[in-house]
Image (cartoon, rainbow, N blue to C red; front, top):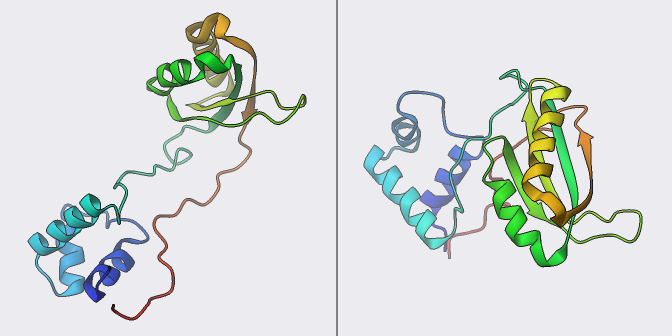
Length: 163
């Protein structure tokens, strides 16, 4: 159960942590709490599963990484988990996940997002993935991003009274 402080903490971090040398201290000051209290409550919320993880969501475009390609793979079903784990471990792959196939027009069951500064760089990285996957792959393609979509952090449901 989330208390009023938990809801205030989640609301204070919903758009991300402040970009300062002491983000938890800044949140604590805004909430009228100590830095230690904020960190401890975040730790408890993580342990309880109320917060899944805390991570960075970079704006690749602002970093100069403007070519982004979702590579899609038709991988033999008996090897998709193994191949997916190997692809997901590559440092240039930010998302790698299994999805169901959709009929003869969409045979792909493994998706891996690769980033680069140019399309050629992304295509070279997709070639690395293909070499890694070897004969487990029957077909693949690359879908390039045309624009960045808005990325957001946690958005809690409407506040509920304390229980």
